[in-house]
Image (tube, rainbow, N blue to C red; front, top):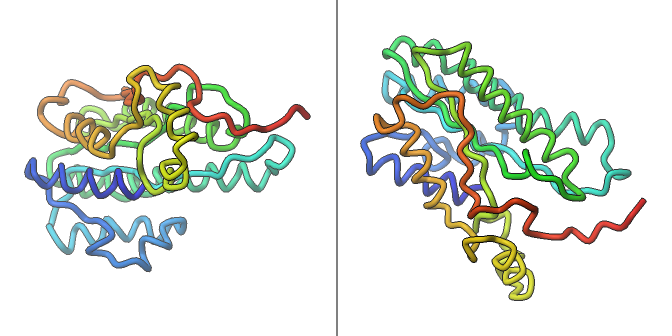
Amino acid sequence: MRGVQTAGCLDASEHGHRDVHDHQLGPQLVDELHGLDAVAGLVDHARDAFGRLDLVVNNVGGTMPQAFMDTTAKTMEDAFHFNVATAHALLHAAVPLMVEGGGGSAVNISSAMGRLAGRGFVAYGTAKAALAHYTRLSAMDLAPRIRVNAIAVGSVATSALDIVMQIDEMRVAMEDATPLGRIGDPEDIAAAIVFLASDAGSYVTGKVIEVDGGTEAPTLDMGIPDV
């Protein structure tokens, strides 16, 4: 969700947070974020660049929708690695530096599919549900010095939806399936990140904030037939 990442960086910068993101790190490190050592390297970069770390946003994730019988054990392992293990690796590496600076905040980007049920999302939805509960558990472990929250994101106009946004029929169907009648903007997610990271969210930890336009069902039918 590169659009969410970029919007989050811009919004956080406007509110006084200096950020470490792909424009500074270069594409190679970003492309290798599936490697846990590379994830931990982000913390080293923050220490070298700023001398401290106040905010971690775990935005790496995603798994392609697949029919149940096409979802292998390896698919499930990869989904957990990319959506959960990388988040833990970054936060685990960041905690000492955050504590050294007096504390901080972490925001995990989860998904509405972590609580909704729809065909094709058994790997992705299960991994995102795990990330949501990881948020609750890690918040207990790291309180009171570090707050940990998550955002359960709905359909947002990022690069992941490029094809959908270009096909009017699909886009309108998703808008019609969303109570607020539109697909979300990356800035909607960025605003929630800023709230959770700022003093305004200082009494919030272990919570999953739903920023999804009010959806209570998947907004896109994958057209997967019965087994």
